[in-house]
Structure formats: structure tokens, C-alpha cells
Amino acid sequence: MEKITLEEFEEKVTTTSHESVIVFSADWCGPCKQLSKMIGTLDPQNQLRVYKIDVDTEGKLAEMFNVRSIPSVFKVKEGVTVDSFIGLPQPQTLKEFLGVEGE
Image (cartoon, rainbow, N blue to C red; front, top):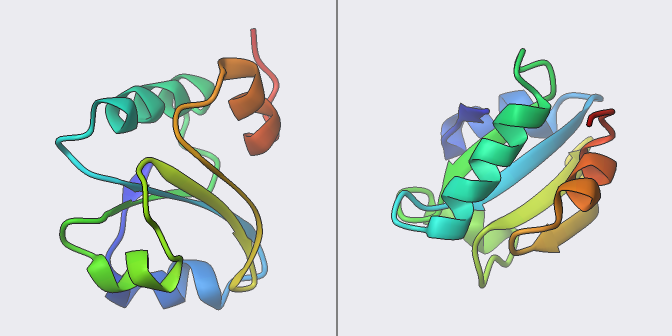
């Protein structure tokens, strides 16, 4: 999972036709850390387009997505949100959201 800033957001997410997953989190957030580990386990080769955005340093992006709780996760295609969830999901739910196979 790659950490990105507002400046990188447009290039990596908005202007691409590929589906991206945006994870809003903070370094101090326990569930956010757990979610990051889960995603790392499901995507060990970092092949998915999953981007982490720190709400403490990237408040404008958090406002753009109306983030009120973390972790908040958005699936985005061509700059438009196509799916989202808030909180720490069950592993199977996360697999389905990310579209990955796994144990």
C-alpha cells in the first residue's frame, strides 16, 4: 500500500481509468493498522492499486471524500466512488471488496 498526498492524488487516482482503492487512516489508529496488515497479507506483491491517505496531513482529501471516521475505504474509478466502507471489516468481506482470492 503506497502512501500518497493531495499532489499525487490526481495523477494516481483521478486521471487513471484503472480502479483504485483509497484507505483513509492515521498512524495513531489501531483499526487502521490492523486494516493495513490485512491488506498487506491479501496483496503481498503490492499488485493492487491501494493508496493510503493520512487524515492528519491530508485534510483536504479527507474533506473531498467526506471522511468522518477512520478507517474509511473507497473504491474509485476515473475519479468517481463506486463502493466504500467504514471500519475494520471481516477478512472475507475485505477479500470481496478488493476482488482477491485467498485462504
